[in-house]
Length: 312
Image (tube, rainbow, N blue to C red; front, side, top):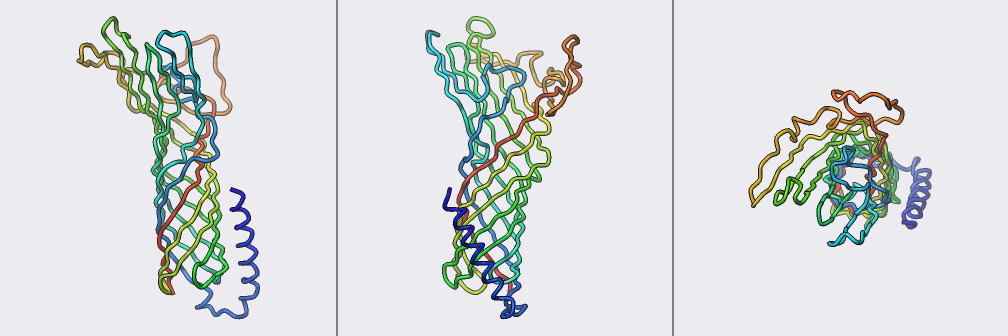
């Protein structure tokens, strides 16, 4: 990771020097150009942290951010800590930019991110098998600056700026199976899907890459990009919920334990960092539950490739 700040410093120094020297020598046609960049890539998790509590109703028995295995005889328990981010996945990007001169420009990108499923909690025992997975899907915009020494052949460059999520949500899929939970020979299966919506959040990115010209207007590029993004959660809702009894290979929905049977208090949640809760009265079951504020870590490090069009 340490090589990236060094390359950024070199690009900034070189671009600034060229910018100072170029002002008296460049015409408007030579120094001011629009460009478009289209590309895609893949990001890996980076800056891993503990995952959030994804089961406020306590349906799974999973301890937050853990992978727990109980031996067949129940005599030992193995606990593994689960850490990571929701920032691994595939990204497609379209960017428009404007070069003030051959060395410094500004740009605005729009990206779609299709996150991988990530295991955030699991419990395996002779009686219960539970698992929680999450994935992030959505769009963001990224304003930034573009710096390059403007070499004629293989041309290095650096980009840096902000990331602002504008649409999408985090999805959590939960499954829990209890052996003989409905009596001898009858297993109980609970499946749920939840969506978490975000408040306004801002992250930042930095990238270094190489641009190779095909002709005066077309080039190809490859780059390494680091993004640091923590998304503030606004609300969450269980959008799918089903309890099924399984006996002799036959399954049947359990009456009274489906999504329509859940009170609002158990299927809608609001995140806040300051709220009051009564210890003497029963919570209103027709209102969303207040829970402590959470942030979704969506940081990642990846590789992008694509093509760039320059307009004369």
